Length: 481
Ligand code: GAP
Image 1 (tube, rainbow, N blue to C red):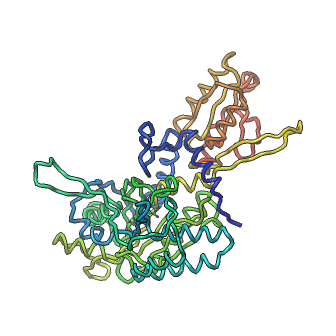
Image 2 (cartoon, helix red, strand yellow):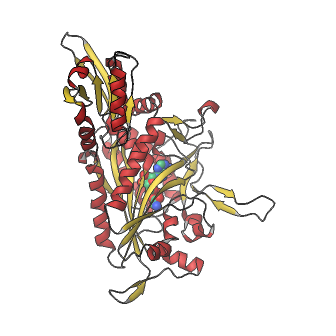
């Protein structure tokens, strides 16, 4: 049974800060809303997730290559992509508090309350009514839905709402000096367009034949109005996107293929299948003929972590129209020129990071042999994603033990991230490594000097055994691959 757990969510946020995973941005200036910095272990974990995704796309598929396109792009790209006209969310303002809400978030929040109060049917009906109205862009209907249910602003606690209006989510800035002709450009709201506009460059230079994919990881920016929930919804975030170019008419089979392939990636990392589900979009984005979210059971409920979109030839056709450049591919197997169709997989790196912490964060208590209670907080991060793979801990700071530990460090640090620590009692050091999610600790003691063995401690079971120094590297390498 999967249940929400807001306390666990708060505990994860505190843990992430205390142990150097995620800090609020600009904290000494009281922070910047919905912007976060990653600390030493957070940036390492984020890098490992990014690498797993990148390798699974580019190394494990002969027909996918990567690019790294610029964040700044020609402003007409966003006109062509439809973002200037369509990338907006319906919002509503509370007249008393002046607070602005995305209407779907406001209604979903209320539905969650209904669920908590034991009215799941009412909550379900409300969401399905909202979906219908949003799909029909019936904003007057949405406003009346909010009013009929007496959904209140959390700040003013009143139901005094404006009409529902659309707000564009793109950030804009000026290219060049202000004295020059004003040239408004946007911070990209998705990395995908950098792939589309490079479609022909990549196809030609990497000699790709359809079907083929282009992958990219990079920052995206959205002026999210309601940006709570920690790193779940940020204004600056990172996306890992792949556009798969296909022959028109084959989109249904490739859409099914990528749905399955992406779900396999998630569960293959070690995350439990019963915490995932697909959620078909009711209201399709302006570019899609089919779309599905991969949702995960976060402590704050089922939430989207990844989207798979059948984008038709919308983007390439539109860029062809706006740029006047042909975006076609000659398919010599069928002797035809066409604009390829596209299946997109798009996952938020920060959201995947939050998913990892949500899965990993565990509070354990148990009774020891002497009858006393003991407890720990452990991050059960899948070993291949763990920031530190091996902690190397000399039992004492003297008697030659640090020297042996340093030798082990020298032997292993080329292959995986090692961490050396000689301060504090061994018990405290184990606890600290548990809190950072380190899957293996080795302790060097006096016996090591006699027989060249160490104690290895396994994070999840806390079991310990003696192994030869010569086998440490292979063991850790094998179990963290
Ligand atoms: N190119 C398609 C696209 O951008 P999307 O559903 O808007 O589609 C894809 O975004 C993914 O990016 C989402 O599934 C989510 O993981 C992540 N994402 C979107 N907005 C985000 C935000 N404000 N903060 C963090 N991650 C976000």
